[in-house]
Length: 174
Image (spheres, rainbow, N blue to C red):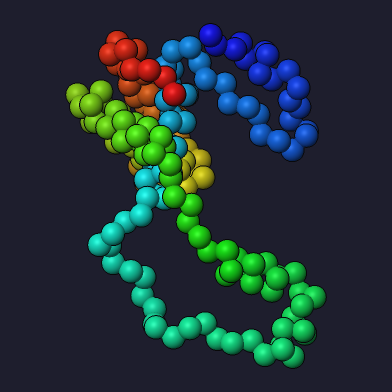
């Protein structure tokens, strides 16, 4: 049983500061597929990578802060934010369900767009750029070197082709 979008958005207002509840469509469509590809790339980035080179640095611990320095910096909001970020450097690990969805979604562009290399490249680059919270114009200017309207059109065409293939194959929506 699916809940209609109007019921999901009944108590939500855009000025409340809360994000809108996600509405999952009854069947695969292009915009929903684009969200799943972006989420898959974000999950891939959160995966623990063993055997990858570490960042350059040294083995010395971070510098110590004297009490006098800490008390003089205590009122500075930038210093507080920097210290909080330094103490909270953790990478949340993805769950098993997120990993399974990521593994499925990563292969969809290559599987369904193998006959259309320009659409394959456009969909992949736009999903990658959006996973870093950038927009299509950034992808068009910096990665694809094409007009943004062409990138938007090709991305939508590619996502619609993938969604049509998923509907034909009977892939369950998530």
